Length: 292
Image (cartoon, rainbow, N blue to C red):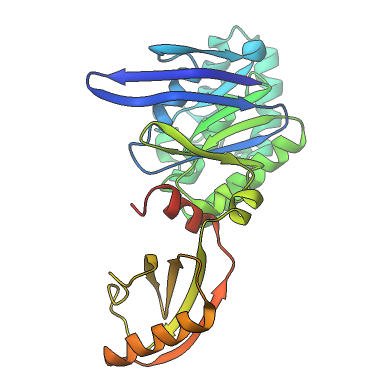
């Protein structure tokens, strides 16, 4: 569906996208993730012809895509159904086809009962579903979504992704950028982007299997978020509630446990438990973004 080769784009001295090669095959859900400023939005705008790359080529097969930008960009002073009619008319669809498709899509996105509500009066999650609805009115084969659930509450995010899975089950190919690693887990493939380049592009399962290091959970009466800073062999440490999560170099488990126990004791803290756990997409993200 998408083939990009050698894509580069600069803004003055800033290289936003550097030599990106990318293939999105039919039927996939490809997630694009990376820290702020990684170049995700610039890449997506190139893919949908809103920006011209300085180098490289892009081919979107059939040009049959729907695009949902990062910011809500529909008309707040129009009703839900009026936004759909306006958007459909821009693509030359007849009133009859717009009416038929609107009914189907509003039912799919659970917006049918709100079709006469002004867009400005919708919640954040409902606004995102309206934007999705407008992107679907042309019945595209490919959907390109730029952080569609950013800032949306967890329940609305869950509902939005259920809709995406239903659409994918009907044959729609999806490219979606997301700041949420639990959403990255739902993709068939994930492209990690950092400083304009892809640092990894594979399935979530394989990315976790090839994780370069070990992950440990530690329970302690310490609540100091920096207690493991500057400890040799520890690449990253985070405090989540009542436990720490450490990313370490590969090590001898018994020796590591003894070192952690001694270190905490010297700092005046107790060790409640220590255990090695499987890596998550969050851990992969931390490593691929250099701990930033």
